Image 1 (cartoon, one colour):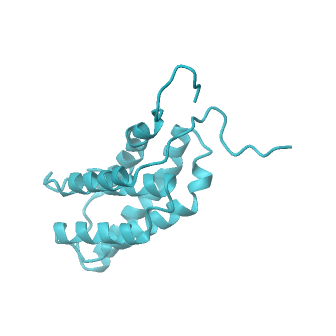
Image 2 (tube, rainbow, N blue to C red):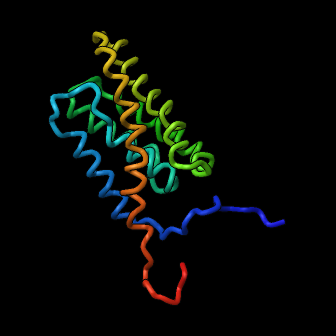
Length: 175
């Protein structure tokens, strides 16, 4: 009996180009750097992009990228240096650990399974802030991981779009 390596109905994808991976991470970082008045419930776009690429391309995106991205956000937000770096490193580590497992599920179930991951990352950030002496920011902060989980299907559709097209479209090739 032959082992089934792909989920039924899953399309074949082209390899992701490095330039696209890095540009999407940079765009997510720029979205996080926009001054939205630091609204507590705003989703962390860089966290979503890091988890996406850690699940879909675990050999290309690692802990170093997550740590450097976290340091950039810590410097820009003038927060405790290393809190985002630690949270992103933990986020990427767990995402790489579960990347084979998570891809077997449908997109809605992936969203459900990634919610605790995003919640834990925000828990690390809040825990480090509280240890540093800051006040509790409030309960609206719990909306951010929910919005990040809800962004997962959108991120999947947008970031897999360049990989879905055929390299040389032809009527005689079914793939």
